[in-house]
Image (cartoon, rainbow, N blue to C red; front, side, top):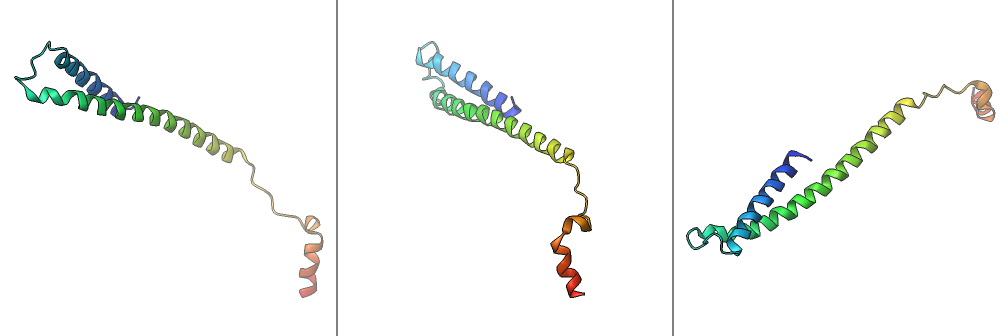
Amino acid sequence: MSRLTKILRTLTIGNLAVAALVLTDIVDASTVPSFYGTFPLGVTCLGMFLISLALDKEVAVFDAEQIERAKAKQTIPLSTPASPERLGEHQTHLDRAA
């Protein structure tokens, strides 16, 4: 997990824990009205966490594919220039022009 994903996970757990305490009336939210915002904030962070987690997996797959492509390009031998015998008829039109 990336650093952003870990931060979003922590924010989600913290906000939803406080929201659960407020919704079950363990904590009186009338003393601190900003506690009412913890549930929407926790749900928003949860959505962003899930998106970030999915993208982390996609980025890992993409990076692995790019590494494989780079390795494949390094193993392809360079082609040798064509010899006159391989040119065949293509050589004849150059000879006629000369």
